Length: 622
Image (cartoon, rainbow, N blue to C red; front, side, top):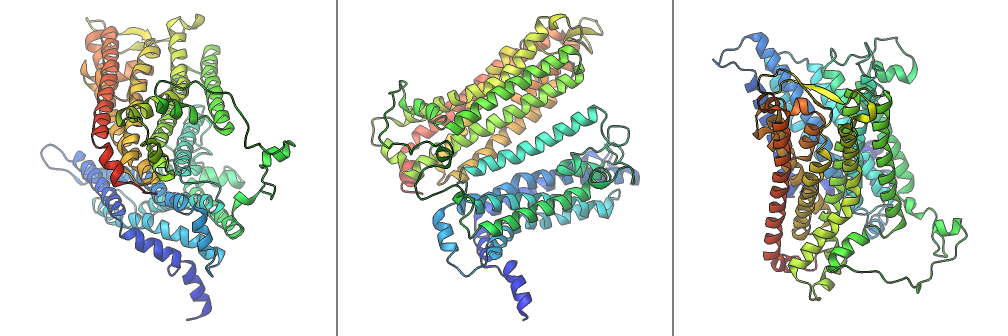
C-alpha cells in the first residue's frame, strides 16, 4: 500500500486512538441504551405524526397523505437536530473528562503518534457514535418519501445540518481536552455554553424579526440564522414563513448569511472545526495552554503581573461562624471560596438585575411595545432559570461523587455525622447557594409584576383584554402581568430547584464518577420537567379550573401563565372569570411546592436507607 494511503488511514479509520474508543464504547451498555432510546424517540414521533394526518374513518386522499408525510418529516428533522445537540456533548464530553488527567497525557505523548494523529483520533473515535446515530435514522427518513411532499435534497440537507452541529461540538470538546486547562467538571460548563448559545441566538433572531430587520418583508432570515442549526433547518423547511433574501440583494459574507443560510452553517461549522483542530495540533505536544504563564518560581501569573510576593503558606485568617449543620455551611460557603467564583456570581447578579430593570424602563418609556416586553421578559426569566437549574444539577451531581474521588467522603464517615444529617446538609447548603442566583430571575419577574400592580407609574399600557369574563361578560380587562407572580413564583420555583438538587445528590451517591452522575441527573430532571411542562402548557389553556393548577407544576409553564394570562388561562377565564383563574394558579403554586417537597423527602428517605450499602459498594472508587 502506498505510504500516502497508509498515512491517511492512520489519521482516520486505522488510527489507534479511534479504534480503541470505538471498540471500548461499543461494549458499553450505556451507549447501547442511548442509541436505542434515540431511535425509539424518533420512531414514536414519526408514528404519532402520521396518525395525526389520518381521518376518523380511516380514509385519506393523496394530498392529505403528502401533507402528513411533510409534517412528519419536519417534526423528526427538528427532533433529530435537538437530540444530536443533546447527545453529542454526552459522547464528546468524555474527551474532556478522560483526557484531562496529566497522567493520561504523559502516557499518550510517549507514543510515536504525531500530533495530528492524536487530535484526529480523539475526534473521529468519539464522533463515530454520533454519525452512527445519524445513519441509523436514515430508514425513518426514507419512509417519508413514500408519502410524498418531501424533496430528497431536503432530507440530505437536514442530515448535513445535524452532522455539522455534531462536528462543531466534537471539535470544541477536543480543543478543550488538548488545552488541558479544564478538568472533569468542565463538561458541565461545556454543556451549559452549548445550550446558552442556542438559546441566545434564537432569542436574538426573534428580536430582529420582531423589529422588522429580517430578510424579505422583515420576518425572514437574519444574521443569526446561519449561526444556529435550528434556525438553519427552519429556513430550509419553511421557506414561505421564513424567507431568504433574494439572490444579489447583498454582497460579501452578508449575502452568504442571508441568501444561503444552510450552506453558511454547514461550511462555517466545518471551517471553525478545522481552526480548532489545527490549533490543537500545535498545542498537544507543547503541554497544552496550561503551560502559558508558568515559571519556575511557582508564583502565579496574576501575582507576578501586579508585583505581589508569593502567598505564604502559614497565613492566618479570621475564624468563620459555622452553622448548626457543618455540611450545609461547607456546601454554601465553599462554592464561593475563590475570587473567580465570587466575581462570576456578582457579575451574574449585577448584569442580570440591570438587564431586568432596563426591560421595565424601556417599556415604561415606550421603547418596547407590550408584546415585545412580555416576550423579552419570558425569554429572560426562562433562560436564567434554565442556567440556574443546570448550575444546581452540576453542583449536586458532583457533591458526593467528587468527595468519593478525592477521599474526602472517607474522612467524613469517621465523624459522628449521620447519613440523614449529611444529606440534609448537602441539600440545605446547595439550595442556600442557589437562592442568591434565583434572586435575578425571580426579582426581575417581581419587579415587572409590582410595576403593573401600581399602575405602571402612569403608563396606560399595563392592562390587556381577556377573551371572556364569566357571568355573560364577553370581554374584560386585566393586568398585563399578574401581580401575584412576585409571590407565587418563589413558592413554586425554589422547591423545584430543591428537587433538582435532590435528584443530583441521588445520582452523585450511586455513580462512580462525576461525569456519569451529571449525565444521569440531566436526563432525569429534563424528562420530568419536560413532561410536567408540556402537560401544564397544554392543560392550562384548554382545561378549566384544573388547567391553571397543572400549569404551576413546572416553572416554565407557570411563568408563561403569569406573563400571558389571557392565553395560558383562556378557558378558565371564560368560564370562571379572571379572579377564578388566578386563584387556581395560586392554588397550583402551593400544590407544586408540596409535590416537589414530597419528592425530595421520598428521595432523601431512600438515600438514607441505602446510604451505608451504597457507600461500601463504591468504596475506593476513583
